Length: 188
Length: 188
DNA sequence: TTAGTTATTGACCGAACGGTCAATAACTAA
DNA sequence: TTAGTTATTGACCGTTCGGTCAATAACTAA
Image 1 (tube, rainbow over the protein chains, first blue to last red):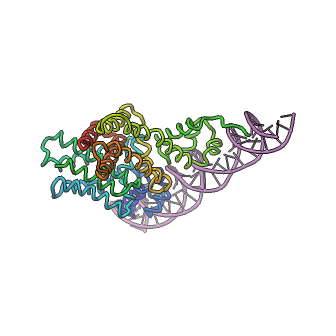
Image 2: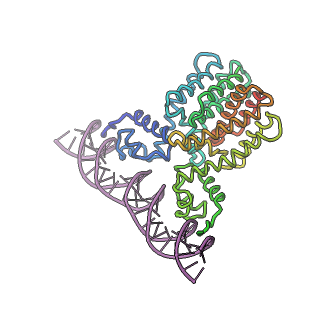
Image 3: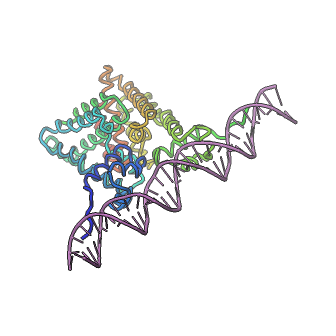
């Protein structure tokens, strides 16, 4: 019918995501996105429309890949306590490896964008909900009461996000370990 | 000796802080700062040097006022549990009143700036430390062991920051209440 | 009164910003 | 082979960005 795309859309979104993840929305320029994706400006605009749509696509991709990886852990094998522990261990490990200083695009989006951008806010809200429900289900074998499980899950999400803020703020890694350990005290 | 300043520096810094608090560093333009402070561009540059210095002054002012208000609570009257509870109640209340959507300039700075700005990172790191120590001291009557108190304090800071992220992300207020309640379970 | 110093003012600057578009290339269906 | 469609290209656009500066105003010490 027409000329086919010469790029792999997933790869491009992945590269856009990495830039937004590292620098945030406002601090990222179109030049950054051009350099990271290997596409020219016109192609990016042709494919996505505008910078904001690129960010939204990146955020959704983060949800589908990175957040989903966490949810997979929660849906996998092991006791509730083991699963939650693994969640925090991921933060500690990625901090040690200097991977974007342990940052989390979801947290960044929540703080940088959600207050003024309803689309981002909706996406963040949905993803937080998804994560909370996955934690609830991981807890359900030991906490059959739904309200109790939901409340504990909310708390774990908070502590998890908090550890992301600490990590990026340069707080000592021990603080994240301490957060994990105390969290686990409340997980049966 | 010379012409005196025609503005109250504290008031100006307060107004700059409010803009950075609400919009973040990159999303704030000099026009925003001019409009909020009532000064003209030249005066702002004369007083601070550049935009980055304005941000740093705002962040330090946030520490001296808002964070200090939290520390005052921790140094004040009441049981450890009461004090920690009050910390979280502040988040819940400011969220309800729509005050910058419950955001916290310190968290924002940590996520938006700390990874790439060593001055901001140092300031954030110091302030987190100050807050953690204040919590430790509030806990000390019930937890004489310093290491134990430090570990629990680290955890509380995490949960506290996490609740700030949830608040701005539009998560239901109940999640912050749940975070508070579970936190308090670990406070003797 | 005056000389010296600093604050204020608003016009001005080059650079970088996000975004557009006409020309061209690459493909497919007929 | 050709007509139709879409992707790619890179030059180009107006706007806004952070920042500067010469002129002027407001003050103080002598």
